[in-house]
Image 1 (cartoon, one colour):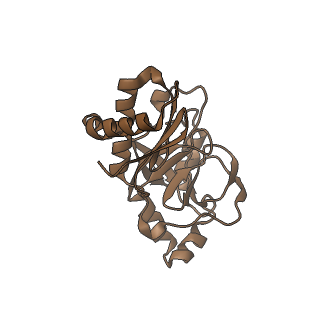
Image 2 (cartoon, rainbow, N blue to C red):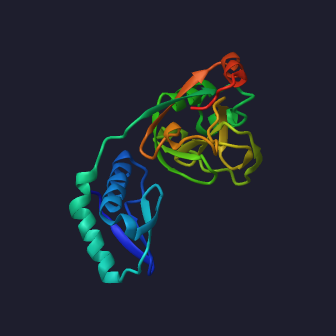
Image 3 (cartoon, helix red, strand yellow):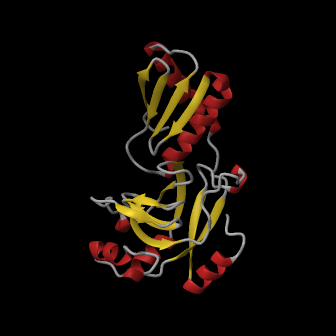
Length: 231
């Protein structure tokens, strides 16, 4: 496994950290550690939160600094047996037309690329779902081509329409509902990315792969008009 550290933030909160990078290898190890902890300490763990390179645990009982180090040693020795392959591929249609990707031209200019090149670089990659955050149903997807890595906007937009596909930092993602946002909008999907009544089985899970499929404006309109636009 990659080098691991453990930090005791509180008597009942600990954080396990990996090197500061976004990678498939780290995600695979995070999932293995989570699986190991859930199997071995199920009732002793009240909550698990994942970040790109962290796993935070809320425990049901206090843990001492020495016990935290013992737990880390146990994880390093045994969690590797829980490593599994990523489970499912999700294909999400995206229209990259200028009226949907209002920042496409600006992002292309920042990197000295054409809009066509930006679109192609974006949809030709497969992305791994590292975690959900910011908004319910907002997927943080790793695997962005280095040529598209773009810092967040200094001043967020007041309005991002639901379904907006955007780039921020080393990640790409989809705004699941109308909201403010500081990422660069490059397209939009007609699919509904969040429904409180939807079964979790019909949503991508952490570790799943997401692939964007380019569609035309006409196809977007046709899909949007259908009764069912969920994944």
